[in-house]
Length: 202
Length: 184
Image (cartoon, rainbow over the protein chains, first blue to last red):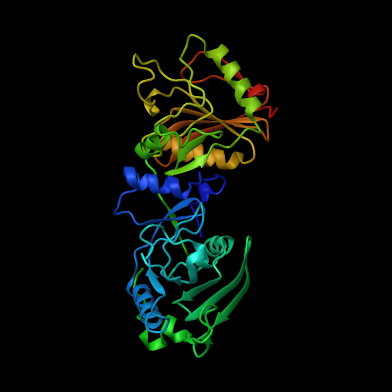
C-alpha cells in the first residue's frame, strides 16, 4: 500500500462503519463511487479488469457447485468485519441464513472462507486487509495472486495478524477449514496458465 | 508490481458536511489536507501555538483581525488549518470560510518534521498564492519564510535564525525569531 509521500507524516481521521453508512445516506459518498471501509479508512475500489473478474467468476463457479446447498456464496458484497471495517471481498462463503442476510450485514463470525483476488493489489491484500481480517477473527482467508498463479492461505487469526500463511502453487490442492472433504485445486481459483489473459488492465 | 490504494478524496463541501453534523467536533482537531481528513498534529507544541497567538495578537493589534487555527479555504487544496493566519478585514467576517485571498500571513509550526511542513507549505500555499507563508521550525529554532509564490512553488525561501527579525509583508511590525520557535 503506497500513499502519496506528503501524507506520510499525517494520520487520517478514521471512521466507524456507522459513520461510513451515514456518509452514504446523505450523499457524501455517492452511489457511483465504489468504496470500502478498511480499518476506518475509506478506500476507493479499483475498477475490475477482465482477468480479475474472470478469477472471481471461476472461483464462484467452482465453490457454488461443491459446497452444501445451504451455504451462501457472497460475491463482492459488504461484510461487516468489525466496528471499523466493512470491505467487499471478492468472494465469501457464509453460514446459512434463511433471509440471506437481508436484516443484518454478515459479520466475521458468519464467514467460513474469504477469498480476495489480488490484481495489482497484492501488497494491500496481504498487508492491511489480512490484518483487518485477522483482527476480526476470519478463520480462513485466501489471496489469489493472478500475476504469479499463487494462492496465499491465511489461518490462525490473532489480533495482530495471521499466525500461519502458506503459499500454494498450481498442481497443489487446498482444503478449506470449513469443508474438510473438499479438495480445491489451486487452478480452480487462479486458473491454468493458458487461461490467463495477456495483461488485461485493472 | 507497484500497488497503489487510493483513499477516498474529500472536498471542502463534504468536509464541512461532516463538520456540520459534529463528526469532526471531537476531542481532537482535524483538517482537510490533500483531499484527506487528517488529525491536526497534536499538542507537543501547544505552548508554542499559544505563545505565538499571544505575541501575534499583541504585535498585530490594529492591523488585522487574527484568526488562530481557523480553517482557510485554499481553493485547490482546501480547508487547511494553519496555526495562525491574520486575515484581511471583511464586513461579513465569519459568514464564510476565509480563502487564500483573505490571508495576509500564514504561519505554521513544525515540531517533529520541519521538512514535511516546509514541503507542504511550499507546495500547497504557493499554489494557493499565499504571499507570505512562515514555518516555525521548533527543532532548529529557526523560521522559514516563503515568498513569491508561483504555481510549482515559492521562488524565495529564507531562513531566519533565533534573534533575527522578520517583517510580514502586510504589516509594519517586526517579529523576532525565537519565542515562537521555543518548543515549550
